[in-house]
Image 1 (cartoon, rainbow, N blue to C red):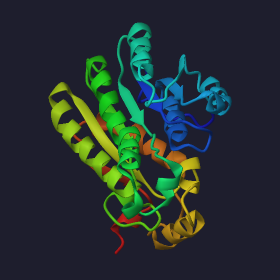
Image 2: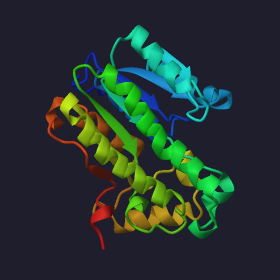
Image 3: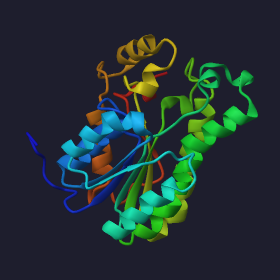
Length: 259
């Protein structure tokens, strides 16, 4: 790749879950990991998504490319079985998926059904726990796990609705997993990017207002892009960050520090 950086992740094996298209946060992370030397395993959620994801996997020379819908029994296990067979280990795992019934995602928390809340929690949070359980045995020499959160996990963001409590649970899961997996040399990070024009982000009501307000309030007065998130994760996956775990890392131009 042009302007290639030092191969600080040379030989590392990374699983990326959550790429939907070239605007996805997970794609920025995949591109950053690849640029600094990692080998990638990439998943797509369904056949319609494959049309957009497969060319990206080819561009990044990913030797493992598989379907993964965490709500379909057996698909998650199949991904890890192939990683175990072909690589025998895993060094990096990134979870960048969320979801729930569209109508309830757009509605307020008071109107959320138990079924809708449970579905959002399962896809957006508990699937990360399930992935961590499968990944841990493959991280024989330690490793790094990432889950994508958002400022709405700990502050009220208008129109974020049900995802606020769900992302709060995801950040708590990262802390507890960091505690449980720390003795194995596995570090766990919640990453909290600023507003990004991803498919999920753009689905939020009044997203453009949210993005413009974030740029106005950020100390750097600039929007975050997916490569900013990717290189932050790449750093956290290196030995340079070997004593960092369990926290939430904000990649938002400083919006999180503002009152």
